[in-house]
Image (tube, rainbow, N blue to C red; front, side):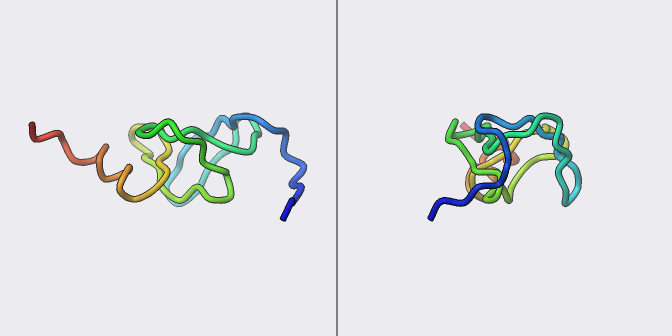
Length: 70
């Protein structure tokens, strides 16, 4: 199903807050800091306030939060 949001296509620039987002530049997606995959804004659920970066899922977020034990 195609839905129109009135948001310009392209990557959004966001400021990640506690339980909220601040739109700096509108867009329809952000790029996951771990995987490099595009995340539609409507599907964005995981981000780091401290690192100011988005994650595609809980596994990607956890991989950034836990230091590499190699």
